[in-house]
Length: 589
Image (cartoon, rainbow, N blue to C red; front, side, top):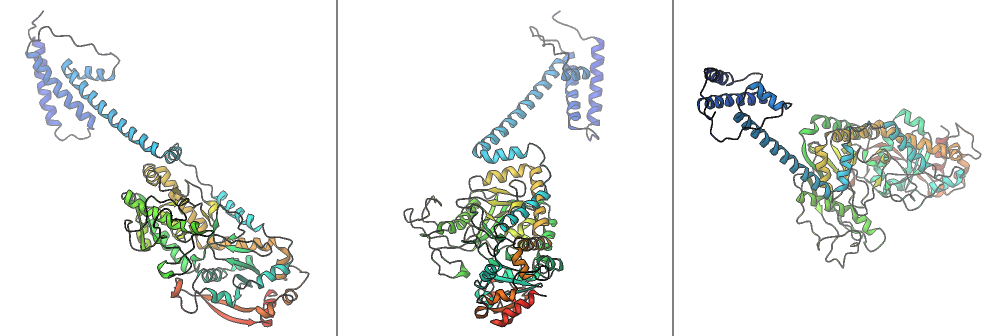
């Protein structure tokens, strides 16, 4: 029939629905224990009942199209049936649900499109991040890392000639007074020229480092009597003498011709006082502030020095190297990298806080034609100045630990290692390395223990923003990097770790050259010729002016602030033939 009167049952049901609606509205004013979905369902029920009551009081419109029957197996329709909703109320709820679904899909599509565009711009960084997100990273194998470091040291030690006559080794040591260091019975001896050559420089720092190391009883026993040469250069030496060991602090990873045996750089200073206290302080600072509460930017502070000819004021960084010969452009690569890093602050201020301090004087360039390094160190505009680059102030370690990412830039003078890296590992931040033109990496003694993506992350000017952005979204990878950076500090940078490595290196040198070891340690073996006889065949009587390092100087930071004594206090022992006799007596103790 076209018109259907309202029955008594329908009217009673409408009145009950109205009463329930009033009660539910009162009870839902301050709901307890209801989730958002339950609140929405209760609201839909109230609307549906009110609509049903209004529909029951009026007649149905003519020529209306009956509603399509819903699927019986639909969970949504089952809920509607339980709530006893009318077709109009059901349609209203369906429209709301469809609108919510469409908005959710649109949001997901926009996020996916943005992510795919981001990945297309940096495919390598996105691929590395996708690989890292495939699952939680495996536990880092520290036993294998320690083994790699020891094997790397042994591979360089094996370059020494085991069959070399001890006469050749001792003659090489006597003829190189500026680099030779003698250790007898836990005491440190050098030539007087060694001390006077560079007061407050890396050679003095190394002497203070070794003096503090020899205070360790176990280290003295392992080292015994030994002689070696020390190369303070950051890029390795230019020649190899297989008759005597030469220790170094760094060398280029792309050049295996250097035969230096790597030991810790001398900026650690006194292990028991300087570095011992500083390491504990850095570790404590790293524990004070959790990573997620730190500044989300990458932090760096440093100088940009000029390298153009050999003269200049070292205190202002205006010391020069000729770019027209040899390694000139490689020597400028460190400054070039630092300029690029500072440029990231202008391009991505929300991700990077990289600024130069004190001075910024890159190589002067007037035009592309006049740039001798234009093929390997390209520039977009000429001349290059620091006017547009952000500058800052020197920051203490309390400032460093306020940042989530700490950037280690290559050294400004040669693009080699930067001693600033010594302090970054224990600070509880993600350590970032830099890659750029002519920056192939500088190997230090613990470099074989490092693993890209596990202990640190390498960035370049092209992908720096993408990599930092991806790290911020990958909590598992960040936690792995933080734990492994602390692991590097605890197993390779701590004072005991440094003592262990140097002792291992010098003891291995003694084993590699048994003939020389027999001469320097006659108590443990019988040499064919005594140390006194071998010294008599050299120029020891004419050239030797022996000096003993009595103790390191505390509170001295290097440079010209160390006074006349430099980094160590010394005591003149003997000269000429008396010095030779003194060395021979010390070998028998």
